Image (tube, rainbow, N blue to C red; front, side):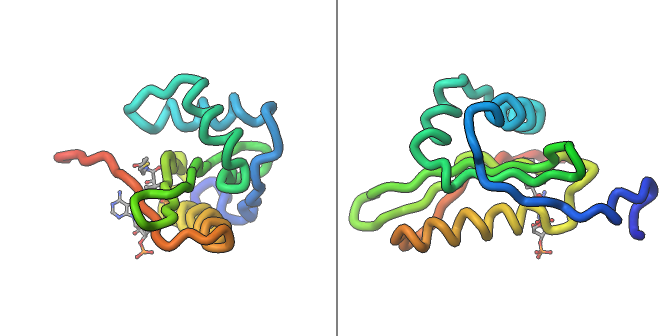
Length: 125
Ligand SMILES: CC(C)(COP(=O)(O)OP(=O)(O)OC[C@H]1O[C@@H](n2cnc3c(N)ncnc32)[C@H](O)[C@@H]1OP(=O)(O)O)[C@@H](O)C(=O)NCCC(=O)NCCS
C-alpha cells in the first residue's frame, strides 16, 4: 500500500467507450480539469466518430481518467490527435495517463496513423 487511504490497493480498470450513457461522466471529468470549455457537440464530434480512441480509467465505480482523440489525413500523413486527456489529481503520477495514451495510440497505429500530436496547457506556477 502506498496511499494514505489505501486507494492504491484497488487496481485501475480500463474500459473503452461503450456508449452515450458514458458521455456525462467523460464531460464532467474533463470540464473539471481542463480550462477550455467544450460544448456537448465537440464531445459528440470526437466520440461518435472515433469511439475506438476513447478510453476511461475506473477506480471502483469512479471514473478517474479519460482520453478523447481523433485521427485523419493531415497534409501528407495520416495523423492521430489527442484532444483531451485528464486524470484527477488524487490519482496522478501512477501511470494512468500513460496507459490511456498507450491504448489510444495502439488503435491509431492499427488504423495506419504515422504520427500523433497533442496540445498542452502551460502554467507559470
Ligand atoms: C497530464 C496528466 C493527464 C498526467 O496524468 P498522470 O496519470 O499523472 O500521468 P502518468 O502518471 O502516466 O505520467 C506520465 C509521465 O508524465 C509525467 N508527468 C505527468 N504530469 C506531468 C506534468 N504536469 N509535468 C511534467 N511531467 C508530467 C510523469 O512524470 C510521467 O513521466 P515518466 O513516465 O517519465 O515517469 C494529468 O496531470 C492531468 O490530468 N493534467 C491536467 C490536464 C492536462 O493538462 N491534460 C493534458 C492536455 S489535454
